Image 1 (cartoon, one colour):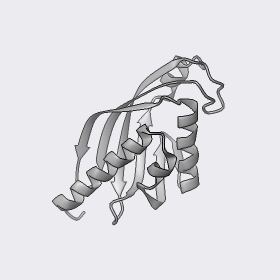
Image 2 (cartoon, rainbow, N blue to C red):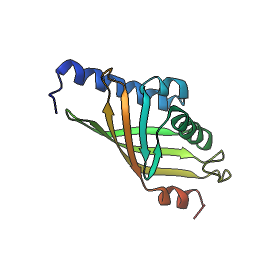
Image 3 (cartoon, rainbow, N blue to C red):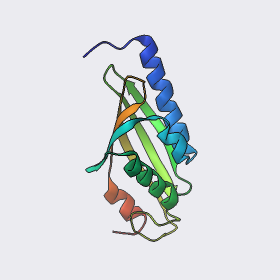
Length: 141
């Protein structure tokens, strides 16, 4: 693995901060502007290997949890990836994953690993969180 320059590292951090801001703003278009033309996302066991699949995922989260918040609690930067530990919070006021709105709050820790392409856009995101915790909190389990 080639060593990443300080400039590349700074560009990757800036790109990821832009990505998280777009998620916070629930702006699917701005979120997609931070990812490569051929993104490879994995949310737990689910592969999202196209821009359409990534769009559908984000729109579903933003629709299901219209007040979704993402609190970054830790950030680790390596030459290979940036890892974020975050807390996801929101109120289930819209249909999510086929589950009708419950009006209940959810809060779940999440860890996401991001890699980047040659343009310093996000090429891959692997996010891990316990869906069963969300299901229990929104009354779906």
